[in-house]
Structure formats: structure tokens, C-alpha cells
Length: 178
Ligand code: PRP
Image (cartoon, rainbow, N blue to C red; front, side, top):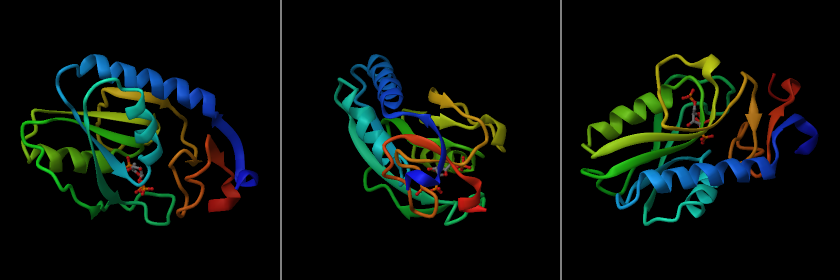
């Protein structure tokens, strides 16, 4: 795995520091609101696990499954639900937890999908943001790092279902996905 990585963007320590800071910010903003965090599978699973452990407040954790990239490195634009919510979100304070915001098509779809179920509020928390690639406007309340337009893997992010278990986030060598 490691030999397919061109450059490490965020080492484990940098990720831990940032995710802890994000979790603490959410805990301050959502005191007494019992927020529901909805992690977007699969990419968010590691981020979610670290984020909620940095949040010292009662909260509910749910997961929602979508896939738009398949085994490709470019979005197909069509968002497919692979796992629906099993709980009612009406009247709840929702925080969507994403590993990466790229074109914005996934979050655009999810915002509409969740809004129609009448939550009290919805905010977005994304670890990574690639603003250069945006095709629709999305304004996350919490952003970990802005990154350049490179193909990144690790800490939950995959290419063709590989590399999710790398403890850092790195840039994949182009010859691996070309
Ligand atoms: C990735 C990522 C986001 C989405 C972002 O998911 O986890 O959900 O793409 O891209 P967008 O802003 O261009 O929509 P992917 O479809 O690769 O599924 P995965 O999380 O299971 O890897």
C-alpha cells in the first residue's frame, strides 16, 4: 500500500489534532441539543469514530450509505443509496459527517433528501474540502482541511475499495489509477 503513495498530506498526528479541534467546536455549538451525527459511508467511518470521541456531549450516531464514484476516480454524478436511515430525523439537529467534499453532488443530494424529512437544522462537517472541483455550492459549517485537486486516499478514503486503512492521508501516484 505505502509504495503507491506519492506524498503524505496529513500524518496521523496532524489528523488527530484537527479532528479533536473539530469535535470540541461541535461540542461547544451543540450543548444541550443532542445532535444526530449522520456519517456518509463508507469514507467517513474513521473520521466519525475519532470525531465523536472528541465531543464531550450527548449525541446520536447514525450512518447513511451512498456511492457515486463506483470504482472510478471521477464522479458519475448519479448518487445511489446503499444504506438508508433507520431512524426519524424530524425535529432533530443533524450534522452530516463526510470525509471529503469534491464536486458537491453527494452533499447536494443528501441535503435535499434530509431537508424533506423536516429536521430542526442541518449542518455539514467535512474533513477535507477540494474547492477547485466544486460543481454546486455547498457551505459546510465545519471544514478540516482544504486540499488541492489531487487524488487522496487513507483514513477512510479509498481508491477501488483499497487504502481506507492507511492511518494517514496521502496522494495516490497517478500511475495507480490512470
Ligand atoms: C466519496 C466521499 C463523498 C463523495 C464526495 O464517496 O465519501 O461521499 O465521494 O464527492 P462529491 O462531492 O464529488 O459528491 P464515494 O462515492 O467514493 O463512496 P465511499 O465513501 O464509499 O468511498
